Image 1 (tube, rainbow, N blue to C red):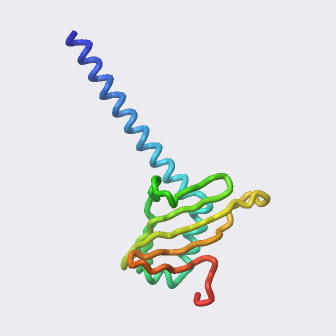
Image 2 (cartoon, helix red, strand yellow; image 1 turned 30 degrees about the horizontal axis):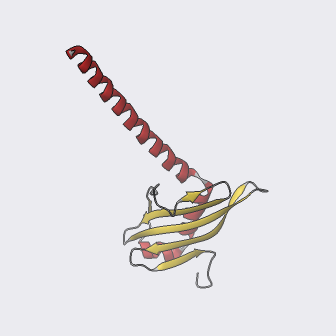
Image 3 (cartoon, one colour; image 1 turned 45 degrees about the vertical axis):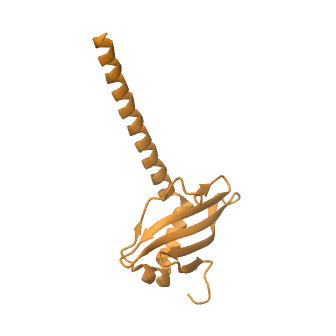
Length: 133
């Protein structure tokens, strides 16, 4: 009886470690796919081009953080993508909100809106560009 209990404990530990590692790997790959996606890249490029937003953050350096996978603002399907990307600079941080739609004829993503919300609550519209930029 002692031997079978010990074997069962070892199997339980093994399965727990493998499951945890698998979940960690899946989380990493999902974050990597989001960061490489066209709709994510286009939004970050727009932020980098906007001098007002970059100055408000205190960037460069600009740090792009992993998105929160459970946040309801992060939704992607075959036609639409909506993300809330955490960003920080040397002064402050905030969230880069982006909405994109898929152009099926050209097989690419098109930005609809990009806005930066700072921790102070200030919102800076980045795309489409306003007259002040």
